[in-house]
Length: 243
Image (cartoon, rainbow, N blue to C red; front, side, top):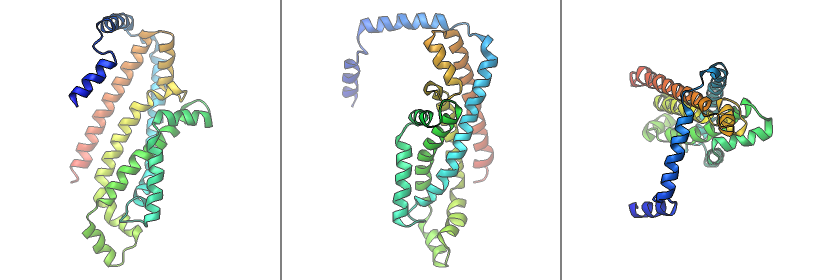
């Protein structure tokens, strides 16, 4: 595998001395043009960043509301096989298309702006969480499920009183991970016209305004670090302590 990787990198020109030299020269020019960051755009960048956060939260929440029932319907211990297959097909289609491409499709449908980005994140979240939840719910101890089924519990009662209580911590942890991913993904959806801070990133890249671009990148970095800290705190405070 290492030999194959080395051969591939060689074919791609990674070991081309002239390309490496030119790349380092370009990197030096780019680095020089990115400092100092242009703090004059902070008011505009702050509003764009807030729009990005709104897109991520809304897309994650809406996707979760759809993925949760699809997860139950995709678990063979809770639903008939035809329903399981249909649910997993829907989830597979949603997961196959990247969030950026979903955003492009919704820009065509609903027009430019954050609504397209929110819907794009929603559909990708459905595909990602729907698959994880189906496998998570299906992994519930079959002996417990059969015991409750033996005393006459319906599928809805099994989902509500058996499967969900056992799976809730893992499901919420996966939801937090999905939110972290969507915050990162929403930062680039603006390249497709879906609003947020990515819209201004695309403009500054096209106009070679690298100092302003640096400001946006630093804001995104700060947002991701804060989100990671909040997510870790929630996991430690509410999920780990409840085990």
